[in-house]
Amino acid sequence: MNKIDYTIRAMQELKTMVRRKDYGFTRAIDAAISSLQEQANREKENKPLTLEQLKQMNKKPVWVVGKRELEAGVNGWMLIDTKSSSPAARDFTKSCNFADYDKLWLAYAREPVSK
Image 1 (cartoon, rainbow, N blue to C red):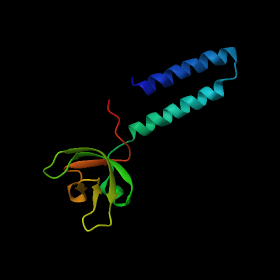
Image 2: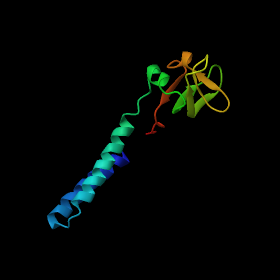
Image 3: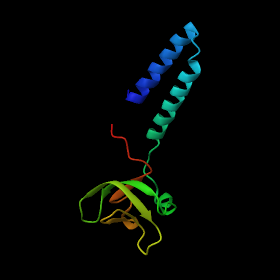
Image 4: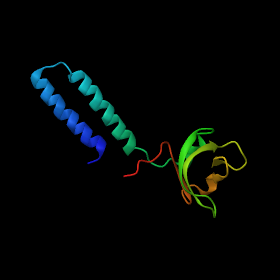
């Protein structure tokens, strides 16, 4: 059980206890549980983007994991550049070409959560 799931369970138990005493806090607890559930769903849904999705993201940031051609690994934010003659994800030093996508590197909408 991860931290978010544990917190959701604790909030649900707190809601049950509060409801018995009728303190009127159940709406706030419901909002907290809903927010935590949304966060958990977002983290679960952070799958690698498809090449088609990347092609629609000119000048947008993505989290890149993998390596560049014959170079060191990359693990961080890059900007998508679809308008150049060689579309790629770029940072200040180098780029990850679309031709190598899903072979050498992957892109995510958010930084993947390590477990």
